[in-house]
Amino acid sequence: MSAIKKQLHVNLFEMNCVSHIVHGMWVHPDNNRHRFNDLDFWTELAQLVEYGTFDGIFLADVIGAYDQFRGGPETSLREGLQIPNNDPLLLIPAMAHVTKNLGFGATFSTTYEPPFTFARRMSTLDHLTKGRVGWNIVTSYLPNAALNFGFDGEVPHDQRYLIANEYLDVLYKLWEGSWDDDAVIQDRANRTYTDPSKVRYINHIGEHFRVKGPHLSQPSRQRTPVLFQATGSNAGKEFAARHAEVVFTGGQNSDAVRTNVADMRARARAQGRDPAHIKFITTANIIVGRTDDEVAAKIDDYRRLISAEGRLAHSQSQFDFTAYSRDEKLADIIARGEVDRGKIPPRFRPDQTIGEIIEQLRSVSQGRYFAAGTPGIVADAIETWLDQDDIDGINLVQYLSFSTARDFIDLVVPELRRRGRFREKYVDGETLRERLIGQARLPSDHFGTRYRNPANLAIPAEPLRFPEQDSETPATRLSDHEFRQRAIANSGTSL
Image 1 (cartoon, rainbow, N blue to C red):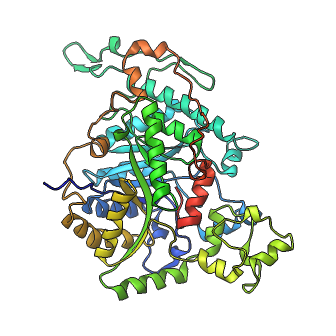
Image 2: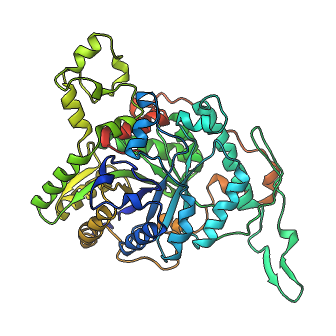
């Protein structure tokens, strides 16, 4: 009897902006990115993605501008590079209204806005989507974001995670502990909608937050939304081990990815969790066509438009390669003391010319999670990722909206289905968490479930500690900022 094959989870990677990741492509005549302010853009996209039976649409976000390259935001503004951008949460009700099964993940930061109002916002979305919503937990790393909220500079990295840990503690108390499952009785005869004895204050008093409660929303299907997180730092991974249900991971090769996944599973186990309750997702760039010639034509078409300046701005580069002659060698610039070698990403070699580096920046993609070819070739690559790298799914990066999603749906999905690697249809009415890990509510071994017992609301949570591990390799010791920048540098993407 053959073993059951792992099926691929797929989210369409999105952002409520013009240029999310592959910068320069918005000018393509077949691209719809300029329509991002139009609600019809999002409802059309949601219906297409649901037709393709994706797990969901994953919405990235930033609350600051990329303004380190050339000392200001001008390049980002010209490129439409995540500015202008709009709130991702406001899109979800409209997309949910025109779909039945599609899931939604949205990014929100724990650093600058209080937890009480966010708890209600997410509960509202969980109600409106009938349990199809997830939250990507971020702590915000852009310097401009800190300045937008009255800070003199970024909150130190590990301190952001300590704040986030207490933020989640407050949310769990509100989502899981403030209301009993049977608090809402809708007793018309006795004119009682909610039984007051089954709703309680949380009375949270911590180092960063004081929240009395009760939660303002009645229990939703999932209560706690599915918890996503992207991280590469020691502190971030300890946080994810306690909280995250879907972890965005990566690496320069299969061994590095497997190391990252194994490390996260070990940390989750140390937190008392079943590692099987965590899914691992990576960002993937896929170009597919019906023939090799069609694929080659798409690659040439995209390469013609991809912006090297956009990628430099997105990576917050402190060095402007475009200011030098294309014939000049990087080694000569370093020798003259015009740039510190430590500020140059390691993938650029000193013996390269500036022209070679710029062409490298303008490539359609680099790194492990890039596949270009006919459907069989792409499916082969995906199966390799699933089986060799031990990942569970991908966030599909878009070159063109809606062509990238449509190509994947029309060409790759049927091939994956033939191989038993992709669902044939949705399970009607399932929540996003049921789709990912098989149950609607947080698993009982998750930290947040401790507050289902009201007596635990008054017990201080165990602090989150960030022990250094001698077993960590450089690939697993990155800060979250470095993790994102390496993702951009190595694959033309960000997490």
